[in-house]
Length: 330
Image (cartoon, rainbow, N blue to C red; front, side, top):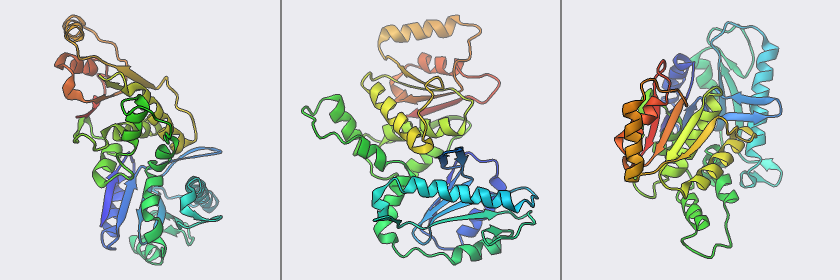
């Protein structure tokens, strides 16, 4: 069964057609819309859609809504998608046998209005279906799980967070290692929580140990790469989490884009749950008549631990002309 993860896309109609067709193929895997962003020498490339499944390996989709007939530009785009994905997967040594990548990568353009003709360009769903049915991945049993880790950017975090000299179970390093080891691969619910973003308030719930901190850091990284003109704030009430969030967000963004994050666009704010702080928040909410917009999006960790006045301050800090977005992990 294919699990559909709906990210940011402007090509929903074509995407819906592809999803309907994929549901006819009895596949086992994930279909991501608006994910990932591939960092390359010439800058970032936003992938329209990505299929990761046991039967085919990796299939990158270009969803073309135009009536274009420039075959050279189209082939260049498909080549860039392939080369950047290959370079990304080759960073993970466990996906290769000596020098050969063991995960097949395919690129295809679904362009129902196009007049182009090429083996990697399909102008109808039937052509796209036939294209996919010709693919095969014989080594999926050995590599599929690790492939998902690489696509979801989980395994590199575990590697970078390898802490062998931890002396105290209560140290910050030990706590971070525990968080990193909570999950090796996102399940479908965690994947949806990271990538799918609703208008207004989005509440993400999970028990202790369910990987909420990693999911929240991944969500910051995803929003950062998709919305290049927005300022994102993340707030929490545990001082020990600040360093963890900085490291996780930094690593996720580097893995996704090959670039260091611009911290002018990500604000990590440590909140407080003490009575005095709550009183200050209440006075601010009641006294400020024309609040200043500070952020485009705010993500709140453990939102239930904050007072209603602090959350009202969050709303007041967001644009009034656009839909307010607060992501709450509770």
